[in-house]
Image (cartoon, rainbow, N blue to C red):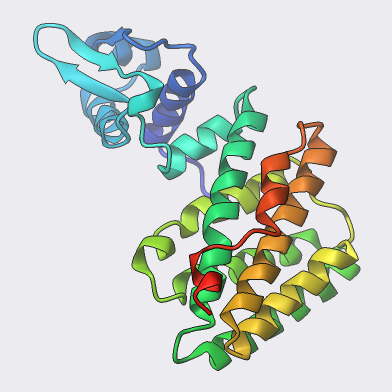
Length: 253
């Protein structure tokens, strides 16, 4: 893996300090001070601040300097913000927030994917991916299993026919990678999630939106509750209700 650039190193340090509260809201950053602190050029600091501004973490105030914005202003879907929060001491809360997002969007995306003209093609590809994931999991190859799992879920988002849902693919990928990096995935796959992955693939391939949505809802909740058990996080009881609920795509069938 390539060494991070100097700009990336400084960005990760500052961004992490902001999201963890080590640099509190309202604090003022000055370019000259940052140059001295990190022993880097003005151009590096300028690039870092530009990136932080793009995520709404900081804002420029005339005659004051660069001010840290409050959490409610941050772009919580920014890839770096998610990563920094997951790497913080408050990672359980971030994981729960992301879990709720998954439970809200992935069942809908699965139902929509089953409605697309190429649903049979998508379903066949999903079945192949599910088989790869199962085989890798059974031999304990967590890296291959993770890649297949990410491919499975992102394929559904990207082929569901809704560009807004597709744009959330990085959010879902972050959740899946975080589970792996936090060692919250079993060494060998549990049977229920494996069966549910295949049920999702089959329902999409058969063009059955209600079944695809229901299977995905069960899958997401099953995985989330497994993570909660392994991480010691309080059970996300509201999500269990979603596993038997009806959303718009299924209700219209």
